[in-house]
Length: 169
Image (tube, rainbow, N blue to C red; front, side):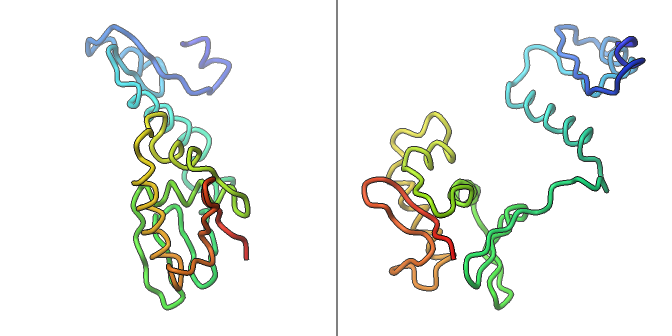
């Protein structure tokens, strides 16, 4: 660890079976960014790695920090970082986590059809079987938030038998 630190500031996370306090203190004292012991939760490892990478490559005030992603849909604007839709009258409509994931996937492919499978995969991951009806409910609720008239959608269109499409202006 000392050799690594002498030549580089690369982020380092110790993943060890040694879980004594002295081991943790030694690892962190040598310059590690974090220390996690076995057994560990895979999600926890991913979250810790993500935090380290954000701190390392996007510190507060960093000029290259990604700008907030927004999606304009007529008189409404989707703000992904705050998970809300801002209406032209100043009203904010909160988005659920599933609605936000759906809008991200549709926004990434704006103008193109996104299949049912791709949308379900983006929202529920590999274990999405059986969520087809739930997907339709989420789409309906999204339409109620982004469309002027949800019964005659202008933005979130159905591609019958295939999936959905977020239209461009």
